[in-house]
Image 1 (cartoon, rainbow, N blue to C red):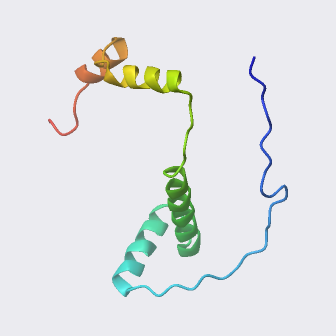
Image 2 (cartoon, one colour):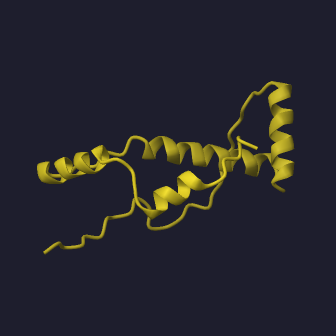
Length: 101
């Protein structure tokens, strides 16, 4: 029987105070950022904050360590070693490839 344990949160309240971050960037990069922000209907600041937050989350997720017992690990390796197959795989392989017009 597995027991579910609630993980404590680092912050139970959200800090709504903002802090300045100053960056120096070449004008060509700034123009690129401005064009991308405009295309998404965002301000430069909102666009940069969103992009930086996503990059930070991905970086931390890439460092996630998952611990399992030996039996589970061996099963995981067995599944990885099996050739792909099944209805979903066949449908994927039969789908039109955008690079082959």
